[in-house]
Length: 448
Image 1 (cartoon, helix red, strand yellow):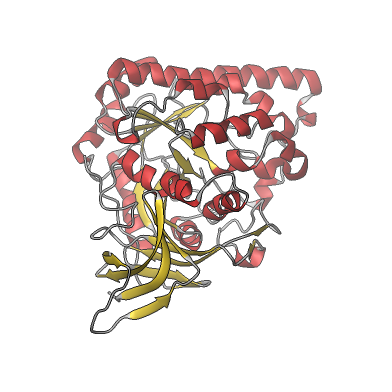
Image 2: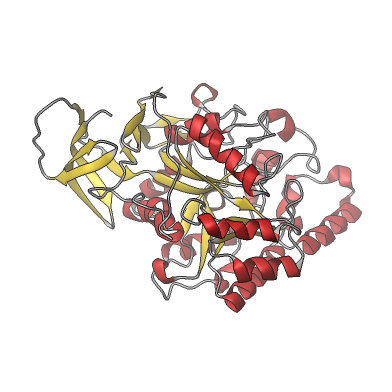
């Protein structure tokens, strides 16, 4: 594997920024120092004026393989991830077939091994009737990121509303339990209400946050937390979208000591319900993007550490699928190529520091999931790192999208930063728009 020295770059890591040289060798960060001299062959990269960040770890993506590959696949979406500075991902189980058995789960790992340009892990899926299979995950907890419970509607047989099943999973799982929390009964009641009021044919994406409302999120998150507290389970609630839910989370303990953690997604920090007028179904997602006061509260919760991680819930659909009427159009937004750029835009606006972005997108996922030797720029750790130029703009155009679906709600937007280089386990996988696909990503390993 090639050896690299990155010279005179601002290294952003563990709450501080300092100009350093960084030596990458044999897939690892070998040395970080004010100046590095070595003999032998190496490639030198001039980092002057740029910043080196740990690679983003996205703990929630939907890459659609197997079974939904007309929308996306592990190769195309991991490629988009790498182009955007995401070096590791954790993918959700609601594919076709859903990852509801250990055999089907391992099939996804085989796809990742052969096709993913980024490091990868896959969640074990939970249904109302596969608790025995789910608990087998305990036997390989050092090689599986967690189990995923949809406590709201989802693709396939994955809505879990059987309290006996929930008791067994929360009581028996030795791995992290990640939940999608929306109350199905509240959603159904709201949907029927608005169908009656305006007629099904008149429903648009603007009704989405009213149907999948704040109450539905809060009630479901509360149930998950009650189960976790009863059993002292390790619970991570995904994509918090409401002000009301924030009262359920604490910043009284360091992240490594928390048993209940929470995530916010980039689109809930970026858009509000007012944006449905412009984007319509293109930003239809679950949980819904809601009224502006929720966005403001989420920012506060992120900055004061009630919200622990920033992720994407990257969930692509074809353009044609999104052009259907509201009730038929699927929920989900492609985001993984631009999540870091979205947050760097917030840095430029003074909404968050660069060090805090690194904490929430790299360090915190590594702590939360106990990922081995990743998430930091440390000597001896895997060289998952990203060079960004905060002086170079990036315009989102169809010509530079790497998603298989070929569209983004961010098209024609210009970000005030650029991702210039992405290293995955020491391999320079992306450099100024050019991919090197000669090496694949690695399966994540966990310290459990």
